[in-house]
Image (cartoon, rainbow, N blue to C red; front, side, top):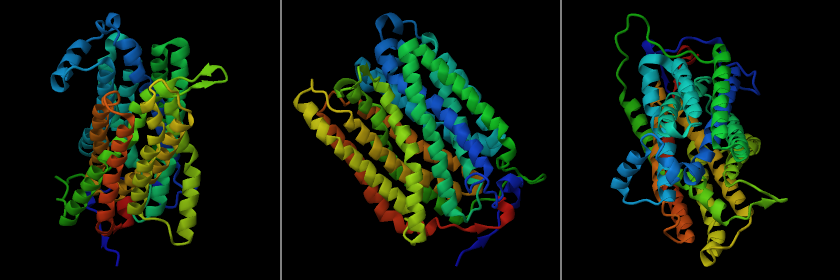
Length: 476
């Protein structure tokens, strides 16, 4: 029997007709999904465009002796990092910086969630994040402000990312699990339009007009995201607020704490998968730069442009994945949330196992150039796996986390990506220090462990996190 529980009066969101359960004006989903999805698409365009340039920009430009001395604080930062890690080559140092940056943008959403839950609300926190990120992108156009720019991007992403994702979940009734998961899949598709176009466009701009032009373009795109978000505010769920006169929210129940514990466990289990997936943009990029034949009709494709494949596949495959889930639903065979996560981890493991084939050839002859089909396969399989587990986890946390700390719990999910990204940067430094076959075997194992763990906890997690219907006043 489904339990019926009332939401605490002082935590109910302000009613919003546009986010009502019967709003299906955007391909069967609320209109607010369109604005949030397009906002995130432009933000990801800027983010992935800049990220695709970052590693090679450091190696090929910023770390040159005649340039590095003019970057505020960079020599001091490198010395501090090497005190922890030991001496680092330029490539290893760049990999560490890339991993730290990639990780910290997923660490700060915890604090962005707290800021929204306790003080500003999701809307104002998202807008603050967009402004900070735009400033960071523009400051990347100058060598001297490199570290300041990264700091602004990290803080801005913390304000932006978890809170806009939380708003997606609040567009749907609590019990509408299937439509919410598909809504997050559509949201992920829009994100990956930006993730595809950003690296491609910014890489070409950087190659033709220089690194700083590519970074400046990313800043302009972030401003477009801010404008779209502000235009869509009437269609977004209102921020949660306390009823006037209430002193503090009621304490979390025992069930709430059990749910929190399970969600934290699930996010922790997924940390090694983050390493296995995101290494494609770190060590995978070095493999493409050094060992992939990139000539196409007389034009050499920039290595950083290959990062666009992840966005392309994650966008192009969404309709097929949604169609598959819809057909499975009609037959009563659609995997549940835990099942989709398990399938995603399995496919991520397979992506790394496939790369053992070209790695064997490269280990035998470091001068060999392998076909572009291999990075295509890596990005394709990783994208399929990602589409199974990541939108599902977003929908799960949005639905199951207690309302009083919903944005904070979304930040905790992103925090697992922080840990995995930092770990990814450290392991990426092994690329030139170990056989490439062993490197990919390591990463296949990093996906296999979470796969086994999720199989063990799938049934108890599904029971504990099953939807508990709230009265409509609590979610409308």
